[in-house]
Image 1 (tube, rainbow, N blue to C red):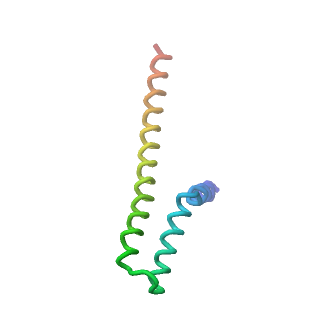
Image 2 (cartoon, one colour):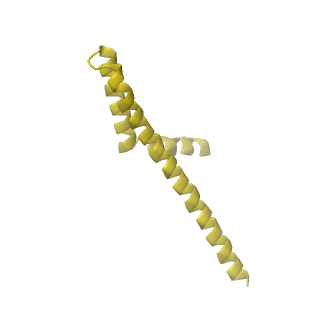
Image 3 (spheres, rainbow, N blue to C red):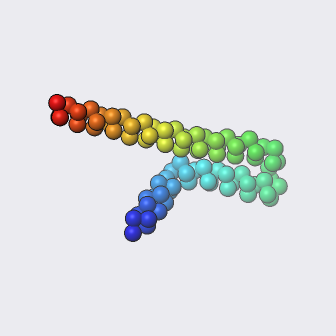
Length: 85
């Protein structure tokens, strides 16, 4: 049951505006390139930039969450030490 909740939460996080825009832009450029309407030389830098931005912001978000959790744990330990004293 816990696994299903985790999967559901991950899917909910995946469906946000930034993710949808990333997939839409990538899909449109790939579609146009496959149809020959634009050159692959034009597609590659744009798609690379969009995907890099997406994963860069995801990485930054994950790092902030890690720092936030570490700070909370440190504050909790300090509060416990103060309570014991």
